[in-house]
Length: 133
Image (tube, rainbow, N blue to C red; front, side, top):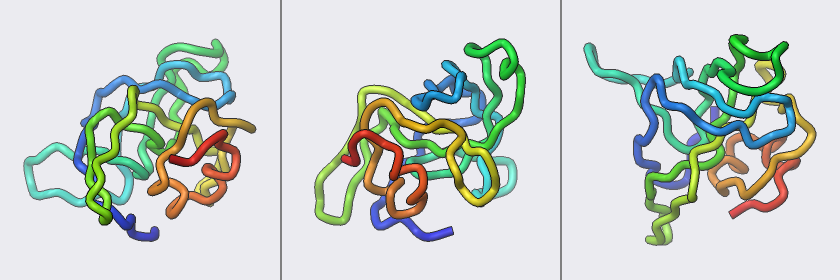
């Protein structure tokens, strides 16, 4: 996975509820794991912008409820610092569900903005977003 060109702050831990911002049918998801994340022994892993996470659907389409999906964290409330010195944050925490391991999104459009760090790492997800911020 490509490195992100900013210094993202660890913001969401396991058990956090996030909004699904795509049109896949899910509305509210719970983070159950963070993929490709390293931490010291005994410390809980955290998710940050652009990370691939495992989520379960809590609210939404009845067929999807309780199912386990891969997702990408596209927005976070916690501010993070870019290399240019600016600090960026969004008004909510949101994920976009993935269809397969290659990074293809499950939905066909993403409501709201997506961070530029997501575009660097997940080009297919940023392609269906309305704006990249």
